[in-house]
Image 1 (spheres, rainbow, N blue to C red):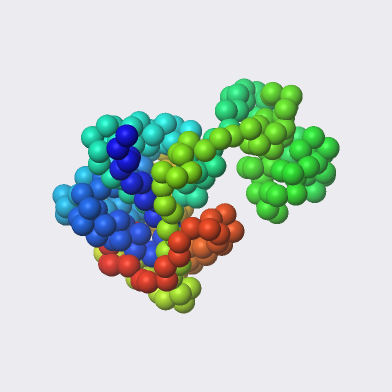
Image 2 (cartoon, one colour):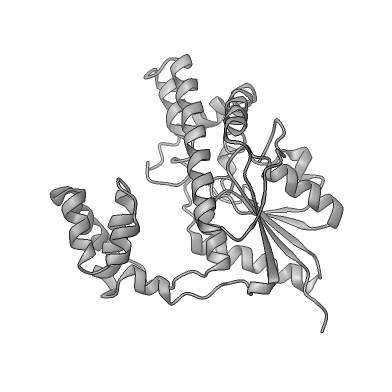
Length: 300
């Protein structure tokens, strides 16, 4: 039986050059590049999310970039199913694949598995949200600990969304989120992939983040956000939560000066990169590491 084509996972923070490295490898190997970044799924924000340029996309086969409308909320499960479908096609064609991005949960769904949790009714979630608002985080967390101690201890302070999610799953299913997650199995066979994390020097990474913001503004990020906000989509959609939308929307509305908005966007980008660095360091300790700066002035 022939050996299946290799699958390479490339993760890392924004502005670390993930896309540039993936493109280099794809040109050398003929691999197909698959997007593993939740923000780059959306067609509306090519510039603000630093998607590969049209020129870069012409140099190698790119999949799952700009495939969703901002009004369409993709979940981890939906992305995983789409990625697995593509990987199945590539395996049949004996073509290698490179999955690249900064969304840790996407990689975890492939390498650790995705819990088959029943959907939570909207009414249940609204009721739990109301309970959180009434109790406050400390008391709500204590109540969650009665049914899901692991989640109550693991979820970071201030992460209301995950706390509400954990309680909502228990209320809806009668089983804790942690128990559901414990039953998961990897979507990829353990010997079918290799993982790499780009971990640049933090100070250098932050300089890249600042330079990227300047480049985005130069290339039309403000126009992208203006077009997006004109659609008046709900604030809870993933595309509306993309880094930079809030800051540039405030600039467009006159709530912030350009100087303040740019400074806030640069700080938000650096904060995002820091969270990504921390997450991958904690969650992927056995993946290969490189500190080489693969960044260019464009994507990645």
